Structures are given as structure tokens and as C-alpha cells.
Image 1 (spheres, rainbow, N blue to C red):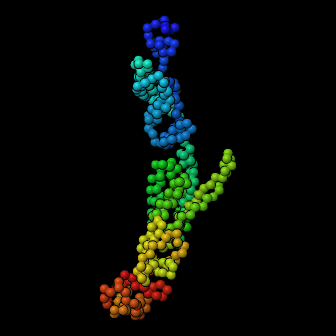
Image 2 (cartoon, helix red, strand yellow):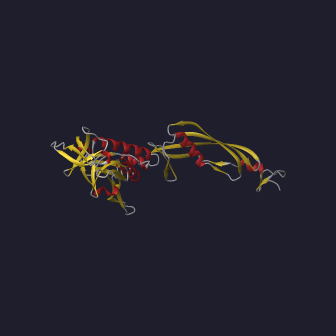
Image 3 (cartoon, helix red, strand yellow):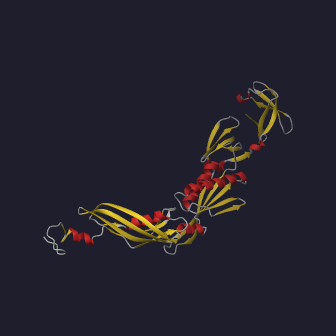
Amino acid sequence: MFCPECGSTDKEMVGDICIDCFLKEFQMIELPKRIEVQICSHCNSKLEEGKWSEENIPEEEIIYRALERNIKIADEVSNEIINLEIDQIKGTLAYCFVEVTGEVHGTQIEETHDCEVKIQKTVCPSCSKMQSGYYETVVQFRADKREIKPEEYAKADEVVERTLIKQSSSDKLAYCPQIAKLKEGYDYYIGSFKSGKKVAESLKEEFGGIIKESPRLISEDKSTGKGLYRIWISVRIPEFEINDFIKYEDKIIQVHSISKNSFVGADISTNKKHNIPMKNMDDIELVKKANEVETTTIISKSPSIIQILDPSDYSAVDLEMKDEFADYNIGDEIKLIKIDNYIYLLN
């Protein structure tokens, strides 16, 4: 066979022409002369195929990725090596070149291509929402039948901030554009529902309590006809605190610890421990605060009776001796709590 281009009869043929004529017109890669890339001017995330992905990527890395994404390698090329270089950056325009070496039908060849990468600065939807104060969830921090203490508000602020920082690695809407400080408690406005739920769960883990969700219709999506909702999440922490006294199932219990889903206390009559689910919080009555504990003096004791002074009127009161008080002596001070006109000694 002979090559119709050059007339050669002794060279390898590629299709209807010889290898030399084939390689004269052959290009190992296709690359546009100009590539346009949209990136967010706030978080450096980039728009690819209609989707915003990643953030805080260095600008040079964005340029290199844009080049890589737009290179198309011909099927005939093998063992290719591609070198990308940014020659210079002027404003939002990067002047680049691409060097390619590879084998085509057993022949080693090289190519160089010039390309411009245009960086178009814009604002991604997430940053746009953040700037406008957009939120999907309101986490309401409340206490049951009492005012929240300043130190509890301070701790809640820390919990919210810590949770949102952790969430921000996977959720761009993990932010709090507003905190409404109301008489009944704080309202934390959270960018996304997902992070709002995490904030509520973290508050419950720190303080205990009950979580309730309440969706509210705010508008309608005109394109789909579907309702647009915001979610209010109430975190109601217990009325009682550690060392307070509560009544539960006719038992008087002193609270020893509070956790996410339950609290532990001891029956002050029997010293028996109880683990009570937090979901039963509405069935619990606070009867005395820890700061209402009083101190008195032992004036007499026997194997069955311990006699103390009632601190309200200094009258003598006989109480049943219990094992935990056996080591006390006359004249020792002992703590007590008075509930429904009955005195309970505390060890």
C-alpha cells in the first residue's frame, strides 16, 4: 500500500495514510483556548456541572483542577505524561500552558497547548443565605417552671458555638445569625435543620430535659406548589438541679446526677438509688431546693433513736436511728431537710 498524502510505500500505515502523515495532523489532547470557572468570593467553593462543591480551595488549585477537567486525551495515546503550568495570573485571568508527552502507535511525541482560565467571582447559594440571615430552625432554650441562671445561659452559648464549629466541616449552613434573648429563654436561629437538631441534642446532653419539634408553614414554593417550613425545636431543661429534692411515685428523692436521657437520685428515706427516665419529667414535682438544707445538733442517741434539735424552734425531735447515722456522736452537727413538716436526716 502507498500513502496518498506523500506517496510513501515503506512506512507503517494508520488507516489510509502513513504514520508520518497521520502524526502531522494528530493531536494527543483537546483543550479549549479559554476555560471559565465560577467560584464563590466568600468561601472559594466552585460551580461544576450545576453543583457547588468543596470550599476554601486555593485559587491556583482551582485553576489546575479546571485544566485537568477540560483535557480530553485521544484514544490512540498511551503512557501519557501531562504537565500543567500557570505562566502568570493577571487579575481574574490565568495564562497557562500544558505539556504532553506520550506514545502514539509506538512513536514518542510531545505537544504544548496554551490556555486561559477565567475566574468569575460570584456568591454561592449557601453564602448568599448566610449573608441574608437565612435560617431553617429556631432552637428554643427553656427551663421548666423556673428562670434560667446566667451561668446556664453562658454554658448554653458555649455548647451552641462548639456544636456549630464541629458541624461546619460538613454543613455550610451551620451558623447562628441571631440569638433572641427573651424573658423566658434564648432562641438560637440556626442556618440548617440538620445543624439545628445537633444543637438541640447537644443542649439536652449538657443539661438533660425534653426535646419537642414544631414545624411552621412560612410560605409556598411557587415553582413546585409545596409548602416551605421552618422548624422550632424546644429544649426544656428540668426544673430541678443536682442535689435538689423531688417527689416521684410518692418517693422523696435527692438528685445526684443528670444526664441526657435520665437522672439518678436516692430515696432519702431508704437511701435506695433510682434511675428515672428524662421522658417522665412531667411526672416529677420539685419539693425542695438544695440551698434549703439545714444543719442541726445531735443531743441524744440510743440504738433505736437519734434525737436532734428542730432548727426552726429548737425543740427536741426523736427520729429513727439508721445504720448510716450509727457513727455520729452527741454534739455532732448533722444536715436535714424538712418536707411537709417531716424532718429527714441527710448523711
